[in-house]
Image 1 (cartoon, helix red, strand yellow):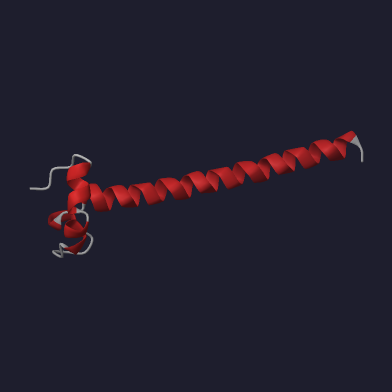
Image 2 (cartoon, rainbow, N blue to C red; image 1 turned 90 degrees about the horizontal axis):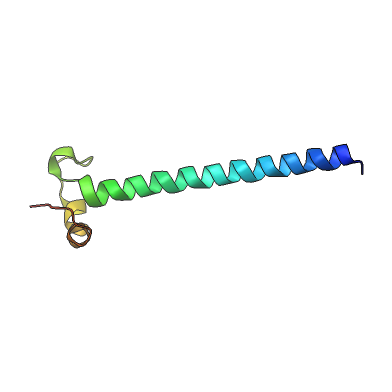
Length: 71
């Protein structure tokens, strides 16, 4: 193996690792924002489920634990 081939292989491995890391960070951020919405923001008027309050009631205690007012 020549040094050029080794360098190209290292760059490709670095690119694969970078892409994988970026995908994981993006997925984690999206899931965190979804969780934040349901725990902190989802309340009747802006609910994506309309006037249904099942999500609000399900995470009610978590809202208070995290300091979100909901009354």
